[in-house]
Amino acid sequence: MFRKPYYLIPVALAVCLVQNASGQYNWSGADNNGLWSDPNNWVQLVVPPASAGDIFVDPVTYTGHVIIGASDVVQNTGTLQGPEWGQTLDIYGTVIDGYALSTVGSLTGPTSTLNLYGNGSVTAGDSFFVGEPWWAPGIQNATVNLYDNSHVTANYVIVSGHLNIYGGTVTALNSGGLGLLTGTATTGGWGSTLVTDASRLIDIAGGGKLVVGGDITSQVNDLIARGILEGNGVVGNVNVDTTSDPGWTIVTAPEPSSIALFGLGGFAMMLFFRRRASTVS
Image (tube, rainbow, N blue to C red; front, side, top):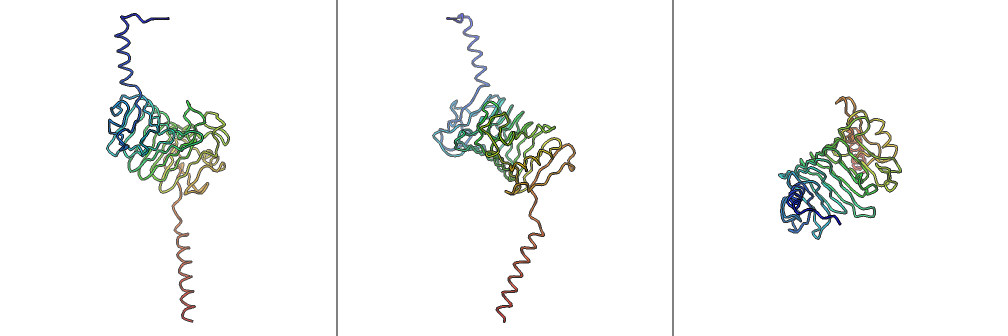
């Protein structure tokens, strides 16, 4: 058995301290209030600092939502691993991930849910995973919802679960068809046959925008043909804009047609007058 020389013990201790300073942090929820900013909600009894490596938000005894408040600024040098395995994370504040944010849920559930509200934002240095990060292929049971003026920005947006853009903007910076990764109809982004289009969906509504580098018109058409791109809950009901901001594709859902609204109003008025005429006669 190899034994470390005693003179290396101080060196090893120093290395451990450095690793701990940039190491992982784990959600405990021990204070039962769901607040990210409460030190007592962390196993390490300290809110993860900007130097944190990976941060894990897994299910604990406390079953309520984990809440990143509007004034919170969450930073790390690695990956925000969560919500995971059925946990729910609500973001009202600012999240800056050195590498990625990964929302994952097991194959058999429950679903992990990430919600962004208000001006909540996630900026990832590399990837934003809606299910199935590359280190866990086939784990797709995840839902991400954007509301209000929230936004997500990353080089790569990988969708293996459900991405609902009910407001705000999701931006995939890479171009050449590489910014938005959606696998194939029968495989996940990393080739796993456990992920198919049965688990995958992008729905845009309420002024939400999907912005991707380059011209992805052909990819949009493919997603529509596969039945996994919706506008207001209807497959293919989207607008594709490649001209208003050269070098980018902006996908939105159309607003309700004023003509359709007029038609409904006219029909209602017709019924009113027919009923009135029959009453008079």
